[in-house]
Image (cartoon, rainbow, N blue to C red; front, top):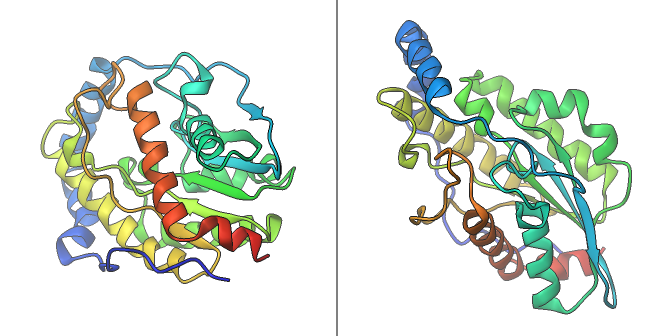
Length: 261
């Protein structure tokens, strides 16, 4: 059984989105200066403390694996249970009354290249039923070339499936950078446009696999979504993001797809 089709049509990147990277090259001195200013102004938050794994007992247990960048590492919260992967898993346990275990693999600042190079071995170490991938924000923020980024995501999809052939892969949408209060213009618009070029290129690729999906774009960020750095989610942000991703996955038949394998 395959996952049900996405609720929203898949949109290709526009000329404006594709132009973000070459425009950034031309504005590199200004963008570099703005980036340095942001790093000086924004507090650097640590990873969530360990453990990055846990469980809730129950029948027919499910295992959840998180792979990715700072949002997988729980940057923005002090209690690891309030991070994205634990919140997704706890909501899954509450919704299904099944046992759930979870673990997270990644680090703050990781790009798709970093994950492929350094984190595949731990990501494939134990079986998983659901794999949550939150990645791409740093590829966009660091203005990594579009073609190389898309190729790395395709390799990641295939490698994760080979290592977890029974799992449903759930990729998160990239952040809506135009709503980030800490980013000045034109840096904010250029990063957002490049993020859209990446997302609109990888979304149809991910959705072409029957075992993989990409969550819809976020509906917006409420007043308590961000942590004190104005960049990473807070406890409220991770909780709402996790529930949003879970509801979409369940609506698209993620549990049925797992059971069919």
